[in-house]
Image (cartoon, rainbow, N blue to C red):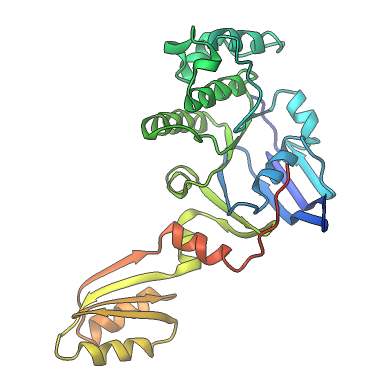
Length: 312
């Protein structure tokens, strides 16, 4: 891998428009994003959010309509040509009549100094199917083959668009174990996924995109807390539970209070203040504070954003 002080990815006020029957569709609408070297970043968003178009611009497959896209301080196509960037996309790029091992060897021959084929096959978990025709491979196996091809130039940045599409649970687990090893070796990884648990478990940072814009950007726990607050659960005195719930609803920052028998759940921006009130003045017992789920944050932050048609 190469070393540089420049960010792996830098997007500045990037837009991308496409013509449509009704006029012009703005698939990306002023995105600013910087990804440092060695980061593992998940790009999340509903269908039509602009994720794939953004990744296409990072890979130099399409040009921005306005704004600038730089990869390691160079235009994307230059970074790709230099072997600094590779991608695992959902479809395309495989010759169905070749065998798996032949495919890796063929693509390796196109690079001046590729990573060793045997090493790449092992890292992608393809050793057992090297002699299998690509056309006989499952969707998950073909994704692993794409991953192997992406490793051949020993890139600094791996861009993954729904990388585990078509994989079963075991294959997904094995794939992410491999990606953990790549990240620990210092490789920058940016991936788009609709599996929220993958982003939660693997990414150091999550960028939520909706309506062609970044609506949240930060560590997973921070996004959860910012979007949904925390939920405080406690047991109340059954005789005064209803009155205590009413007092909780009047506290600053409380957005929701649910009472199930004598067990109360309080959603609030300041969970510490709610916990203190329950423990010191409201007779709460069995206190539990839970951070909101990533799914809650995803829905909360994206549901108000316009969904734009994403065109490839």
